Picture (spheres, one colour):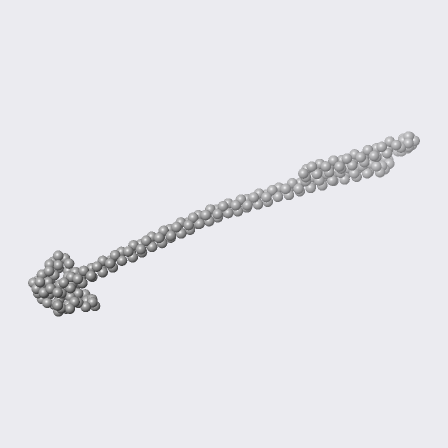
Length: 237
């Protein structure tokens, strides 16, 4: 676009110069022949060492030619400045494009990092939910086992209570061998619990009636460390 404008300016200047020269040439041709004869006669009588007469049209042509050259030089200088500015703008544009690309790359990396972080957060939340569900399942299992243990302990206490009632109602000489056999079979704790449920006087008679004093001493030692239940024993028949 700038080159087209420059060419149009040069063409206009050349056209104006050509029109001016053509106009001056036609004006010279329209002078009467007498003027031409007089100029020839004056030229013959003019001494050979003198300068030709002053011609204003030639001066105008020279000035016009000078102006044309100056305008052409100014146009060339302006074209050079425009080219230099264009190169400078191209450099700035490349820098802007590089910065824009760098920003786009940074944004892309940031989005990828954000997506990765969101994925990790989602994984952690999923793991947290799984752990919570597992914890609840374990707690439920513990509650169920505790309930079974409590139920078993209640059943055992009921059984111990019934056995203590039976041993309490028996004669000491008859109950002592049975309790010794229970200890010898590895049920020392059960025997101690039965004694703890019996009346103290009947339990003492039973220990005294045992043939093995070692077994009686073991039961007595265990019985001292065991807290007796508050449930009262059955009355003596």
